[in-house]
Length: 131
Image (tube, rainbow, N blue to C red):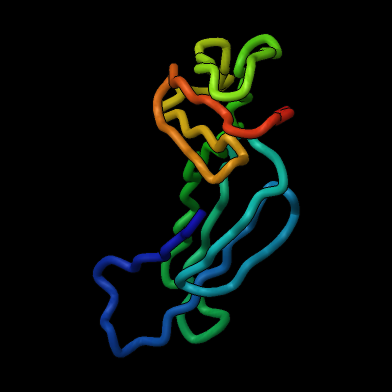
């Protein structure tokens, strides 16, 4: 997540600083701050704007909701047994995304071949065990 402190109606010549307070009790300083959260969830960082280190120009106490994405869980279906060069259908329909919808499906077959799409077909030229 990136946060940017903006001071409206403040002359550019004045030295401005920002301090950000996070729910994990960390504090970050700077007008431009990058923050990484350790767990998915909704966070509400608070920002204060300062001029000349201590003098508060305006207490910009803005709570900005930040939603951290929970990664989707892939599910290619039941295990499949096929002969060499036999076409196998891989289906991602059982994959889930707890906090949204899956927008793309990307398959890596482990033999140098890849495919995109919710349902794809592929054959293997050598005996293969894919998990």
